[in-house]
Length: 84
Image (cartoon, rainbow, N blue to C red; front, top):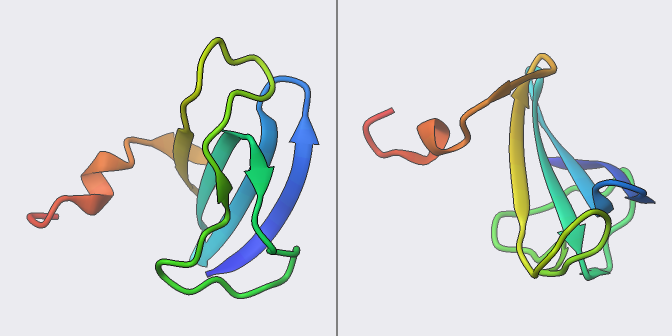
């Protein structure tokens, strides 16, 4: 996967977007801090992309994890089940 975007936005705070290919993207919002990841870098499984936070419109520390397929939001838990 490749880092497609890394920026701070008003609502989502510190945000990282990863491109998994074939129109599949994961988005990680409200990060407190970014890891040493730059746009265009390839990310290996297990490499950190940031630290849990509450930036943007967040009322507590948490990670907003979103998965999109061809820009359509889908339930990411369906993609991590072993019975997929």
